[in-house]
Figure (cartoon, rainbow, N blue to C red):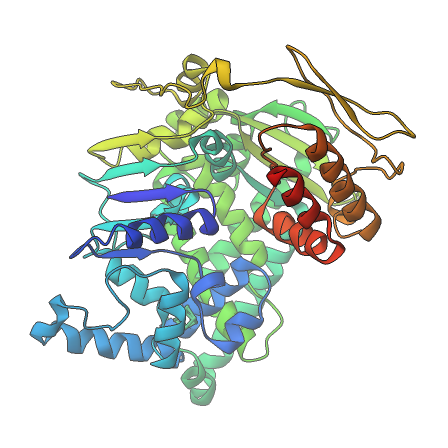
Length: 487
Ligand code: SF4
């Protein structure tokens, strides 16, 4: 069973609930990214997720990560012992990310790779949505068997956005120029290593100079094709049919038959650059990765070039814009506008069941149309609060007096200012402003004095809720609300 939700904090709650059930013999694991699970100090220093992946891949390939080497050793030992079937790794049958990292870091074993190998034998695997819906991440889940699995997508009202985002990619003209420079750096290194045994010993790679030159030639052709433009692309800030990208890619020599081979060569160059970067080099492979992402997006989920054209025309738009920081830098956005595209790709993996759950999926008809799926079973629970239990209340904001309340049949009211005239503006920059926090707390205290039978207060995130309650505990506002509730 695979249980997916949008964020890791939602997954942590689900793991807690599983633990509370006292389920005996159930083995679970939470999969995360290197952001959450990598314990290598050099990789942790990197801020961008893509940089972490590249450096980790390079270190693993070169056997230069102690945590990975230990993981490999323990896996080999576990296979040789009967203890492998029990809790041989000592991290518990139901473990969350924190357990994994704390316990395995102490043993100097890589939690990232350990969690993936554990997924193969787990009864329940917890993952963020995009691990299932993003084809490039899904391809890395080697330990997880989707064929025949029951997949639960919880908080499913977020699924459509994730589907669209995971299929969309962007590339800038600066990326292309950078990619060409990166091939030069890789070629220079390989040339040097051919002549110098010491340099060759620094990095183990199967990459040949002629492969790198071939990729460079393809990038140069793509750059020329873009410079030449295509019908309707003369100016920027334009939206085009997604299929307009296909001739550009083909002109650079990337055909359907060659795309996998070429993108795997590009990946090898990126791995080499990441390793050189860890040894003090400047290039990271960012440019080549961006171009490779576009090639993969064009040919994903199709069987030939015509299929790519049709898919891009049906589901994608090519939006060309100038970078706000540098007008000369043009951004090519391939945006997917059909959530059903990513969802269908997931279904093709042969799931036994797909279950979507949420408190706010209605209207179901448009939801299923957008996802392009026919659900055999749909279930809508009755509302737990009966109509006669609901009082609608109209709050009237009076500037000098406090709030007064009038019980009314309908309430929809936005309160924009506190009684002290402080703007109740929850923008990111204003959220830690003491005047705003005080004003919001005072407003809730005022409302609590005139609302009978308790209130529900919703926050946009746990972080905001914790910051507010901490402030209100210190200011005394929270105690006043509690007193009002009791009286
Ligand atoms: S193998 Fe594990 S510990 Fe080592 S760099 Fe990769 S994720 Fe980090």
